Length: 115
Image 1: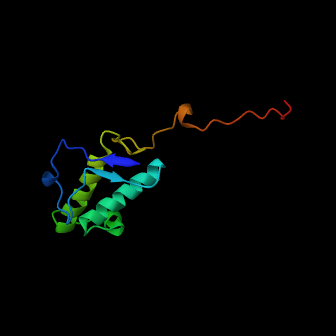
Image 2 (image 1 turned 180 degrees about the vertical axis):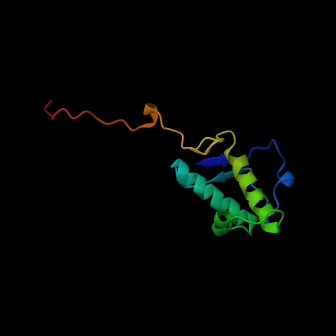
Image 3 (image 1 turned 90 degrees about the vertical axis):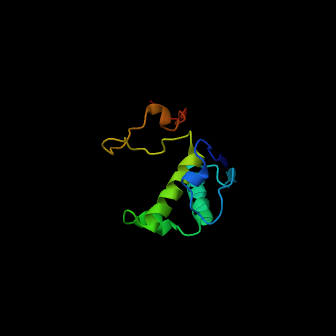
């Protein structure tokens, strides 16, 4: 899968990593959740300081770590744009968004089953 950097904001406005952000990033997985995870890990490696543990544990406001995590989050969003929102929670109350019937897998009819 290929992700293209959205250029509506110049990377110098949000990126503070060791390596510059490429215009495109290719990942191996075609499964959406896995490809997004691969993208996030590539962005972390380009940054050079942020790790998965840093993203999970967060940081104190107004610290270098906070700035670095914000840069990684922003870069991640800039590659995913306009395919957002990614979350399966609504924005106001953080409740799960119910899947519609269209999202459920199709179950084949068993013709051998007696009614």
